[in-house]
Length: 413
Ligand SMILES: NC(=O)c1ccc[n+]([C@@H]2O[C@H](COP(=O)([O-])OP(=O)(O)OC[C@H]3O[C@@H](n4cnc5c(N)ncnc54)[C@H](O)[C@@H]3O)[C@@H](O)[C@H]2O)c1
Image (cartoon, rainbow, N blue to C red):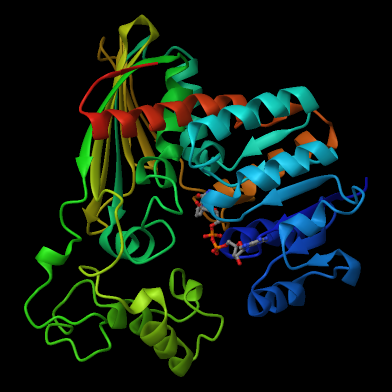
């Protein structure tokens, strides 16, 4: 059995993670090409992968100038660079694994889905949660009928304040000029999970939310443009970049994202010159810091979703599913199920203990890779749970939520 040959487009955080599957399971996958413009990141990437010079590129466009030389491409560029490489890859006949969100615009998502049908290629989206022990077990319980027909789902994604600061205030996903709105950038996973578990089409969406806190008017007296500019309140500020990036273990995410030079001097330089040293109240961010979404599905089942960037890390995502025969409550690790007769009360421990226990997102990163590689090997899209059609459905809920939030109206899907 030969390994599936893959090309990594965008060898940053996510590209590196998926490529590491080939290092762990060389008999399953081989990285034969890469496109990455940042020289220092490319150099780091090439230390782990033995790639022929002619298949090392500065930008994704060059990959598709050559004749097809691999089975699949794994596209891990930023949100606004998902559409064009996906279309080019489909036209060249590659199978695709694309990072979420599909694209920042609904029209682009629809075009990609239609093209993938036309070209009959495996086109998966990185909805890593679907591949975790926790959500796989939730889905199995629901599908077994144990709690009856779902009437209500309540789901919450608590974003820790430092994660909010790093990604959605200072970082890559802070502004819809170049990233998808936060409900898609952060929570398309959650909308996808709700839609998947519900197993029905969403028909109506209403949403509220705003950027309320991370704004200039909330900047404390004495604060400066950068935390390194002699800010008078830096020591007590929970959002201090110095605390986050200088005090944390140095190769730990998100510290590893600010520079390839993770020495003390390298990190300090990144804070003084790059985006991650800026005061959280004085950034060019425009995405929400909290949002709620109410959904109605076929058959009148309802779901509510809360996204909040004001969390201290007490819990991970939580989900409560209420059915006609019983109820399920999960906290991303344990699942409690009880029925209305009172004769059944079970706790499932889904703490990742399997072969993929060490991989990110509760084992979801490698779980997804295993299924994608298998689907490509057998040219069978059914082997991949997060198909592009399923993702389109849940992305449309996200776009509807954004429209509802901005226009203060219920959106009918
Ligand atoms: N599935 C998940 O849970 C999950 C988690 C985090 C991020 N993401 C998504 O993954 C994507 C990448 O995020 P990341 O954190 O890895 O970002 P990143 O910035 O670390 O990586 C993106 C890489 O793309 C490279 N790039 C830029 N222009 C390019 C070009 N023309 N050709 C090829 N490469 C180019 C950049 O240099 C960078 O290295 C985003 O869309 C993000 O939303 C998904």
